[in-house]
Length: 497
Image (cartoon, rainbow, N blue to C red):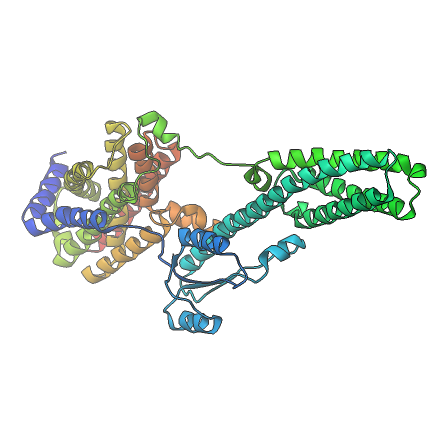
């Protein structure tokens, strides 16, 4: 213990003699975090978009489509032709061009699928993914808006048809009695007008395959309309022949069919258009807010990334210190002095571990306190947080010392430390979820201490739960294996000194 204490005090005094190192390693990360928090606005890309609408589209629908497109994209205030928009897209003045086809309602009525063409010139795969996602969400909303408007128009016409059906049914009742030829001609003209209205109404009913719900009601309405049209054709034929007495049964059946159509119309107009078009609605609630009594949902981006920033700074500081520790002493010839001393390599490494751990603990405490001032919570247990921080520090120091055993110079050690930093940023789950990578990448991410630190800190700080046992086990395995490898390799170098 005396020998370990000697190496421990040696490392602490060396760090104390470098005040600029202390300031840079503590104040530097804090400044980066503060700048990130102050400068971060939005992670979603701003996509400059030109919307080209057909001339035959009604003004209210044009405004509705433009409003829906403007929810996800930033529409430019300029009317482009297709050629001008493609040229602006190629030159980088636009990010997205959307072209709405002509005769949208006509195509919907005929059961066709109008296609909104969306062009981009993106080179960033993440931006292209955003464009496709936002376009998908926008098209869904436009589909709902167009179908809702078409259904609303069909319901308005259905109300007018319902009024005429009542009159037509009464005229059929009159035909069951003896009426003059002039009266028959007048009734026939009224029934023909009613038939034309029903045909027109049937043609504006959207195809049932376009609806998300109540398609059975729409199909029944269409069937009743066709039945009423055939019945009115039969009545017209009877009126032309003038033999009404032999067609009384047909007249009664026709009146019943008209009344059934009137009932189906009453059902159709009583349903809200939004229910027909999209019967399933959503209501989102973040249950995290129930436990902490807040009205907001997820954390702000700055708060969400803070645990990852802490894990990154702890690991990089530990790896950098560890990577330079043994290289510096080996190049200075200190190994020859250590070899003739009564201390062994295990005592040397434990002393260095303790010295660097104390320094990193002080720096981490300062960072954690600063994060609290920035509004980053710690929902979990402080003791578990300190234990996880200690385990992450030891595992990261082990990785740094391992770099120090294989590096031949300070520059190589710094280069290897930077490579470990890049690996940590890309594969630890800091910015990109670990689930986004292929399965064969999993062993690489498991070797990075920060990947377990990010998951553990997020659970403790943001969720208020105990980290998964896998976090503790993996960090412990990394710490033990790296300590064993560093001891073995350093002893070999020690014997050769």
